[in-house]
Length: 248
Ligand code: PGA
Image 1 (cartoon, rainbow, N blue to C red):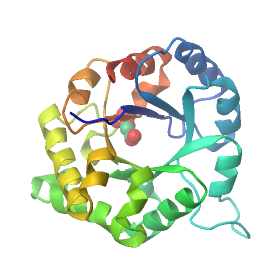
Image 2: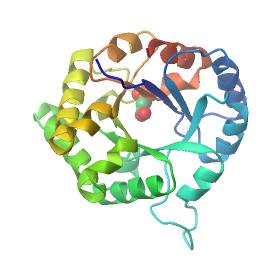
Image 3: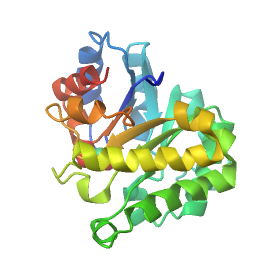
């Protein structure tokens, strides 16, 4: 079976505060499991997260600028994230795509900026309910993936993570079934394999969308699911720890 180490990332979105950071840091002190764990709070808490979290837990950002530095008011650059201790950055989350107009070209540019600064991108892909019902899931998710592969090259995926997040499952309580998720993950891996079998077999593919403490183990047991990107359930110390423990 695969040598891929599981990864669980908590995406706080625009939630949380110093108190939550203290609770999450306190509960993760006891984490001894075999997964890589990443906590992604909003920008203002990143440096404090690096200071508070145990050394075996990584810090990730939720977004970054496609520009290096300069007159871009309100933007945050990759090197800044790296300097305050981030190891990862979420890129192309469906909320960024739908609410802030991020298209595939911008997502690819951000991916390249992240890697140039030594950050590991967590590239999100996922279909809407309409796209799924029209039978377009594969075309949509593979299209989103290939747009980045074509821009940055397949070798860049040697140090990247992909998160499959069906838009209809995010924050809705409607989790994709383990079979539905596994199907899409296998398709994404096969798409990578057409470019590079080695990279396809080593790249971690996370599932995201209403992962909870009680459904995580079954999702993570699927052969092409290497962990999760967790929204709502990452905002409670107990449930996030339980999900990390479900990743073996
Ligand atoms: P959710 O969010 O776990 O609350 O569904 C997942 C995500 O958007 O990353």
